[in-house]
Image (tube, rainbow, N blue to C red; front, side):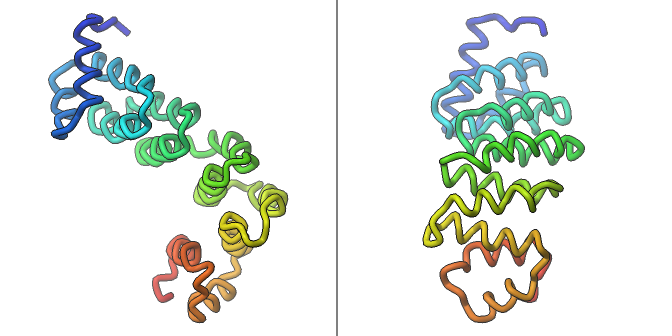
Length: 195
């Protein structure tokens, strides 16, 4: 990659980070693809995750399929779970064949002490059709108190893995308010619009 002049790169990164008026894509479109990639790569170092969340859609819009390596790196290594998950969403839009590369890292996240990150990982593994999720989920489920929200989420996920649509359907029809958040997502993932 030919280096973009340092001062210009810093200016572009600052403008992208500021992006108050939605001009980021316009800015990226007036520079070469190489410079755009450098600027997006430099944005990965910005501390604020809200700014890093702008990278995936900008990368796809400006670089297309060439954004795959950048998005994969972001999805695997960013320090914030929302950024990793958003990058993975965008990566799968342009390179769905890379899904299996994420099974192992997501299984690790399933075992993390961070409930939010573990929950994202569990549902993402289900979406990516990880063949080992059925084995990995019970130990993860047992780590959380039954009253904890992640335990409830993983219970619904277990029903999805087992294909137990009758349990999901019964709880939706009985208005199980404790599980409604996950039941609605499960019904959508199981293509059950009738619930």
